[in-house]
Image (cartoon, rainbow, N blue to C red; front, side, top):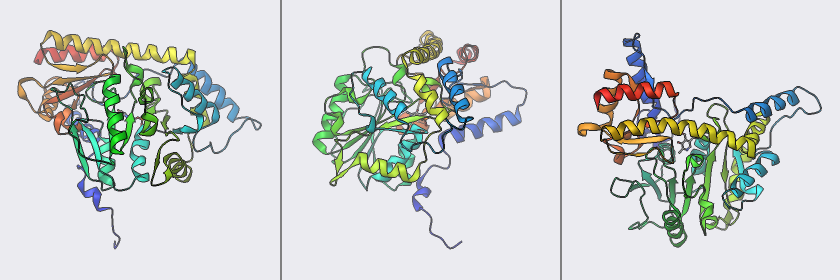
Length: 393
Ligand code: PLP
């Protein structure tokens, strides 16, 4: 073919992290069909949708089968009922968000990737280690990327100290995937102040806010000044078990302006052009998930997963292995034993005890030497994985 391609794709790693893990596991299972694999790798939920959600979705399905209540294309940015339910959810944390600052979407992953489109060639700052989508999508867009080191020394909560860039796009994720570290108000305020003085924008990913235990901010909009320097991505995936159902949102405050243009207007323009909305049935389920009754049910799911986190944490404590997370996050971030590299430890676990986790190096340079375990499995699988782990730690 005689076409030009986006050359930036050549700068990506060969596979998306979880695709690489899936390939290795597939190869192992085809060579050892008799071995039972226990997966504590990809952050996918295992508990079903809650009663409030399925009831609302069933009702919505029925409406779709009746001429008078049938709906065609959904509104690109979400039905009013869901946008308003999301603003009420924010009110739980004392954050005032207007309905037209809420953009409903089919995934925080998509929004994290698509947001790069509305910004120009700014410096990009990404905490390392972190959810790989921010990095890969900025590589695809050909941006200049610098990393903010999250290490054991700073408790995996880097500060803006020493950062020279101005006019940057800064990605923060709290509670963090993979480390489980969560910013307190003071920590987030430092970032907001830095963004304001350096003319930068924070892209804040709060996908795991429902897992927060204790007095930590659930949204960056609990912090003064954030409306002038931040957008926030959040999702029903981990809160309400919507990983397969697909529904998320992005908050873009109207105060955000750059180059004389409103970022809220730009995102609306982008979404209305390239996105055709989340299905009505799904939006009704999402609305139910964050109603008072529905949210209480979601928190029961969260509690169950945090019970798994306790099973894993207790075993690591017993074995004297350093780890973080597992208290305000479904992830446990452990140091690989005996100085092993994270992919070596991955192979050891797969080959010797048939447990699948996620190598820390897949989340960035500073993830080398660490390993992520998730508490999204069943209790039975989690206990089984932990028993097997104890035999080699
Ligand atoms: N943001 C973070 C930090 C995640 O860990 C994940 C999924 O693992 C997502 C976003 C993806 O969310 P969604 O399922 O809404 O695309």
